[in-house]
Image 1: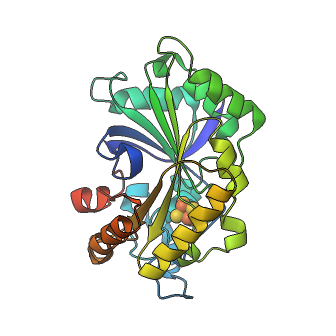
Image 2: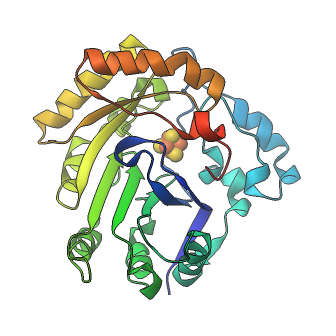
Length: 284
Ligand code: SF4
């Protein structure tokens, strides 16, 4: 039986993108190829908030005890090796059981599954078929992979998803790739972050859209230029702008401006409902 290292597994309302407002189970896998320490920082600077938390990492016995950060990656503990002991390695059987426990009717109804991270398409692609084929997961109709768009699908996983979408009893399950490609405000290099050929291939396995995290007009311009590069390579999906801000003070500085930038440029706006609704606490 396959195992997956799980940073968080919880039930909430999807706050972002296509499924905003939909009751969802979030499976947050451990591990990421980026750090995104530039989010919320002045241009060219990197956040050091996590460094201070890592100094006292021993103090935290549970993932949900960790402090929230206002700059850098807001899910830092899902990939930073200094917090890896807070993320257990669980069998796909244990994950399916736990999902049944947290679903309101202890079975899938209208809820959707979000596989997020970290970067969920790193090594765990080999384990997802075991999870999705589990008898308790048969009632699941919709999945979103929240990815940074840098990890190609393995041929076997792509084939699995294509078959899973048509598998009885539903014959038309919905698979979505929500691609949060990282712009320069993330602090990651463009060469590493922008991989149009990878994202275009996701389209062969599911509905795919781009969701850029932005704060300023300059970021929005970069998002538009970057989206054009994806389109030139065959990307056909929609493009969302989403405000930077893992904490309410940063989010409220940006959300209206980003909504206006989206309108001005004919793009979609994605909120981050988990921030105004739940203060972006762990497990939301
Ligand atoms: S890609 Fe996502 S999870 Fe990884 S460091 Fe960046 S914001 Fe965090």
